[in-house]
Length: 295
Image 1 (tube, helix red, strand yellow):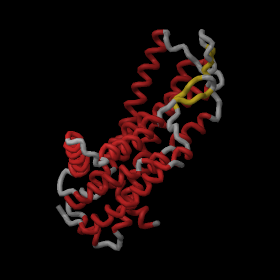
Image 2: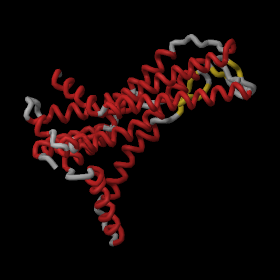
Image 3: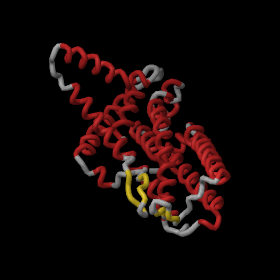
Image 4: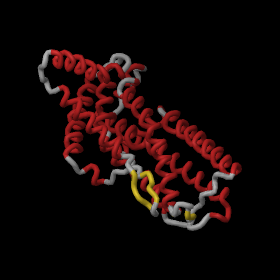
C-alpha cells in the first residue's frame, strides 16, 4: 500500500498542472461566469427567483432543489472537462516514461510493473477526477452563497442538509464512474504501452481497421459480427453517457441528477462483461509493459 501511495504521489508531481492548476482555472472561469450572469440578472431585474418562492405558474422552488441543480450541473461540466484530461493522461501513462527514458531509472527501483500500472490506473480514474469534482463543489457552494447574498431577505429555507448531502453525492460518484469506464481507460493504457509514437494512433487503429473490414464485408454481404461488436461498444458507453444525465425529482422541481446512477446501475450484465474485458486488457497492458523498452 505504501508503495502505491508513493507511486501516486509521483504521478501528482509529474502531472501537477493537469491535476491541480487546470481545476483551479476551471473554478475561476466557472465562478466568474456565474457571478457576471447573476449580477447582471439582479441588476436588470430578471433575477428575482429565490429559495422557497412560489412562481406565478404555481411551481414551487425549494432550497434542496436549487442546491441540487447547482451542484450537479457544475459536476456535469467538470466531468465533461476531466474526461478529456483523463484520456490524454492514460494515452501517455505508459508511453511518456519510455519516451524520456525515465523507465530505466524506475526499473532500477524495487517496484513491480503491476504496481506501476495499478498506481497509474488509480491515479487517473480516481485521484485526477477528484480534483475536478472537488473544484466543481467549491464553485457550486460559492455560487449558491453569492446568489443568497444577492437575493438578500428573499432567501427562505436556505438552511438545509442538502448543503452537505449534494456535495457528498457528487464526490462519491467518482467511484462508480471509474468502475464503469474501467475498460476504456485500460484500453488506452494498452495503446500507451504498445505505442512507439503518438499513442492515439495506436488506440484508434483497431477501430479504423475494423471499420474498413466491415465496409468491405458489408458490400460483399458477408456478416463477420463487426457491426454487433460496434453496437455493443456504443450500447455500453451510450448507457453511461445518456442515462447519466437523466432528470430526477426534488422539491416539486425537476433537477439534474448527476450521477443518475446509483450502485444499482453497475449491477447488470453489461458491467460484468465490461469488468471481464477490463481484466483481460489489464493483463495485456502488464505483459506489454514488461516487454517495453525506451522509444
